[in-house]
Length: 398
Image 1 (cartoon, rainbow, N blue to C red):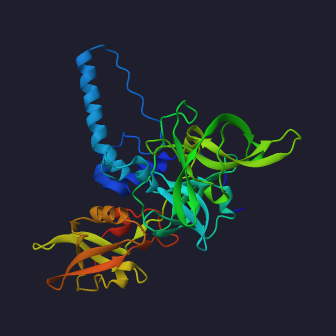
Image 2 (spheres, rainbow, N blue to C red; image 1 turned 90 degrees about the horizontal axis):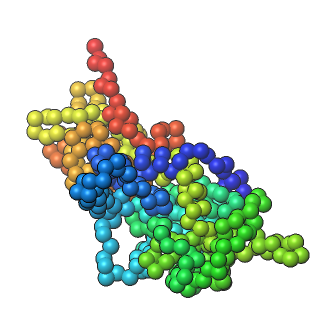
Image 3 (cartoon, one colour; image 1 turned 180 degrees about the horizontal axis):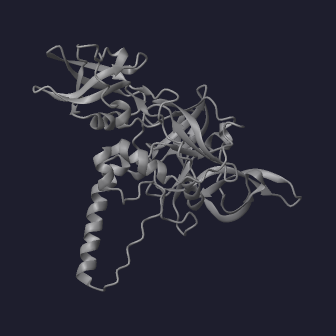
């Protein structure tokens, strides 16, 4: 169990979402524009600012501006366009649910965090946490590692090691125990996920991992299979009201019976806030060092050197040797890159395993190569920076 029994770390989830996730989703320029917007799908809704004046026009204008900002930034933060109003919200929620497998055999279910890409699930089905894969809605599979755990609430945060899934779920503002709640969970029927009606009896104190009392646990009236543990429980909008996990229900004779229960959103938020800064997807790596260059004909990033084991080397990129100039990187997937900073943003905005088309200029002609981004090698910075791609110009040789 040592792999998944990480201690709680004081760093908040903001260190990931604000510093890394946003930059990868929308680029450096977008970060400054929406820095004040909450980015986590499970973050508490922002409180409206309190004004010292009662000027109704000013208040109305401020509200209109806030709505305009939210409308412009929410799709960028969530990595998606506004949902189709004709689409069934439960069908949309299904796109953000994954099946967790070991050696091709289902062991549990998880939910992708919207605008984030990491997977929230229960800890207990994972065993030692090794050799676990997430199968996404389109059938694609990514190896995941355990980035954060909570033994008491039986929660785990999984970090995909290749690829970035865009669809995900967010927290509901509805009460799981409210009158008329129409809740669903996801159950495995063979290898297929199906929606099942779920009933929450109410809150009950249970005993979680390390004998911690869970006073706000949601008691379930529905039955769950072992392979369903980790499933999100969603409302009629497809938003998460709880996650299915396991805890101990004290029996009259003093013994404990392990039962499935619902982890409330409040506990999920607290869990995500304590996620360590290291619980992030591996950074994609191109493997070059370069400097901005304007030849008078074309602008781009001149390649100074190429790491021999890098994707750039495998694609045949050439660095500067003596008086022979290296390739000039002109564009990535059709987007011009005129500085190392822009090139770094384009690389960081993609996932490990992604294939990219790179337009090069060298020997007086253009050529295009396709390469597959690899994870940053051990010992290199977790997130490549422009300086890592474009170091200081080396001293001239005499």
